[in-house]
Image (cartoon, rainbow, N blue to C red):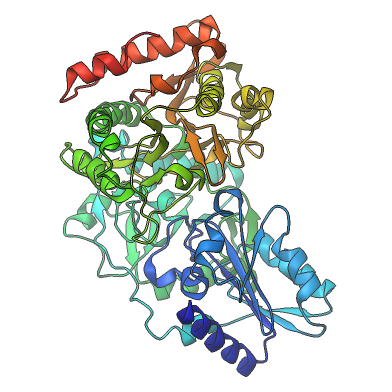
Length: 584
């Protein structure tokens, strides 16, 4: 942890030099993405915390790191707790901590490129409550002292073929431009790389696991786009693919282009745009309309081509999962495999599949107590050997040119205990309840979340994460606006894809999660209603099922699901697959 102490000391010295009493360090980059390039991993560099969501507040005398329930077990293992307090962001918010800890008269700095407008307002109010004030830094003081900061990414931007996108970019742009005209907007500012990649039918590689080109764009009311991107990134053939309605400009031209919108009505998604963008537009005299990024909803509602691609991708991924689970059943009980070797074996099965382009996120490979760490990331120091009488949780996914996958299975290595089987079966009951839900149009994820939790609640159990997240089409494995969670207030629409992943975790003992991806569709029996189509096919460990806790309907669902797995999945060991999917 000595390197973190040096980083903290260096940043504190820089803050003191600038007359700042503290500084806010978020996980996000300029695009508010879940995955950030190494050059933007400021939170990890300062604190050691490597979770996908979090924030640190560093004062001259005190410091704290905040994240959600997925990382409460992980955070103390990665962070020097002699320097940083570890806080659950829901129980002890950063703003409450700032209000209590910022010294009177103190100036709290922040980088306006790394925060959205609402965050800035909250920090401002907290600093004021403490008797201090908030200061927007023209340049990031952390970057000043980060001497070995990696260079910004410069991965090639390549065309994404109509075979996989299902629609031409021209059609998408014309449709969105019509909505701008109807609303009286001249331009929309696009700051989310996945929105821009979707709109222009292109992909990149600037961040791990998600094929994103980091860039900004302006979409005007005639369907033209000005794309602000490093001129070294476009691959040969991209300009021809984009067409003459797309103009390219370097990143430094973005600010002047915003200035040129003076007097015009400009749509900006304040929920994801950097506060810097809104400040620049305001200073230029633009009329800002704060509204949702116009790409988000059509991107979430997959078209027929994208749906066909997602189905095909999941059928191929099922082959890798079946081969891996068969291998695990043979090798796991022998005590010669570890979390890392198991994850590597699954990767080997996947990388042989057609159209494979990498993992959709780092594989969560947790044995025994490590499985209780919701977003566990195995390291050489934590790598645990798989052995009899433990549960093994593997949460993994792949990026294919035609789709993105995400699947979690919990497997018994050896003979499970009664407690493990009871907990697993309650998770399974919640999974089945959501998978079989039928609901009216306009139903939100928050309304459905209870279905997955009710069987757990009946046994006095629960889990501290959402039940499901949206998924992109060869884009982000975590895609909004849809989600199934207590805070999931977006109505589910046909074509959206969500995960179904209830779980249960006992710290120091085991973790359980069962995850499939679901396609929202019009119900085949009641067209005025909505329901789900399960896209993921992988055996659910029958050894962990306590059939006495299942209803006849739940048993029928599991048997029917396993029949689908058996009929649609190719496996190197067909006898194993037949046994793993046998009726219960």
